[in-house]
Length: 276
Image: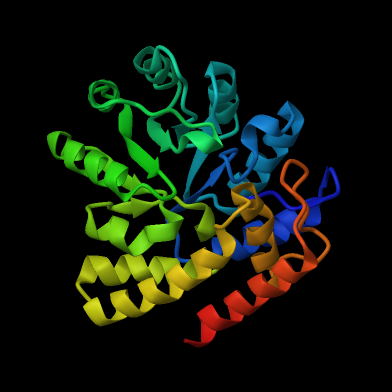
């Protein structure tokens, strides 16, 4: 979940409106403090309030909290999170995941390197996934289908663990490759269409699956594009286009500035996703 900002200040009225709207969407839960939510950049107080708002709005749903170290993990546990999304680390990755899993169940995170991720090799991934309190792995390569295929094949040795797609730019294909859940930045908006895509795949409704995958591919090509860090602001724009948050609560203090013409492109993409 992105955090609505006005300048460098969180707009908590917009945050509450967003959480209330998301609570009515067909989702199993949400992720806070993750890359989309700028978790490592938020202050301790900001993270605490963001988690409080989401926990209050979604009391019966799963909340996953991003964690970059055991202090964040403990804060997440105190705030009522159900699981952790472990930000990647370059060294001692297995020990790191084991330590986090002492606080809450952990979802490992294979993130593309340009966004601060780490290229975990197969040996490391097997070791992480063998930890008893690791639930599975979220894979977000951005554009490396071959890497996703490699990890999907590796998951056959861990049938009790979840392969979770984070692939906004090839969401449909990642489900075809074996992902059984989605935890994606694109899910922050146009959420019902993405939930419908997962349902269509699970029920074998191939006609609906192909239609929805095509619609969402078009939407992702507008929102997940260079400069890639701009996707967070674009998702806030998409929420504003759907009337979820105010037009002026769409700032991302850590993201690049984007031209006004891009905002109109996002608005158009939201409209087109809804009418196809």
